[in-house]
Length: 189
Image (cartoon, helix red, strand yellow):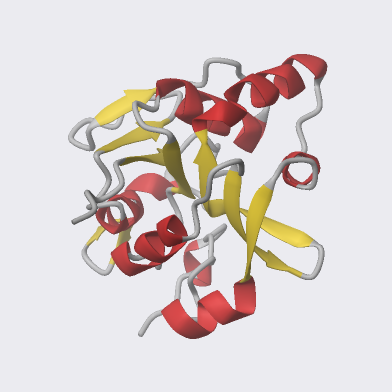
């Protein structure tokens, strides 16, 4: 019998939440903080941590960006640098519709010699709600140091498995990749 894959889960909470009006990671949605919904989706991870430049008491380990100023790329770098396992599930703190089944599905698509498993619609890759391999860390660091901060450029240049975003939403729910910039963006159902 195959042993289940061990993997790391990283939740990014480094944004300013300026459009949201408050720290969205702690915003109560259906009775619990948005970040708790995301962390619950990673319940099967061998380790789970938050990447943020402020503490989040009670939500486990929190690591700051090792190279600040690169937005999502800085968060990805810190997530990869701190990971104990080869595959890292990366999500934003405002993606409450990710599920345990979604991460299982992505992990089934992890392959040798690739560095990411991501959803795509047209030409746009979904950089969050994606899997990244630790071997990508030196390239992410190189891009940060060179000021090449676009996640789309990174994803267009590495070996990856591409999954159809619409098919994933049909399977796991239409709000799967929703990230809330304002409280009104969160569905009330």
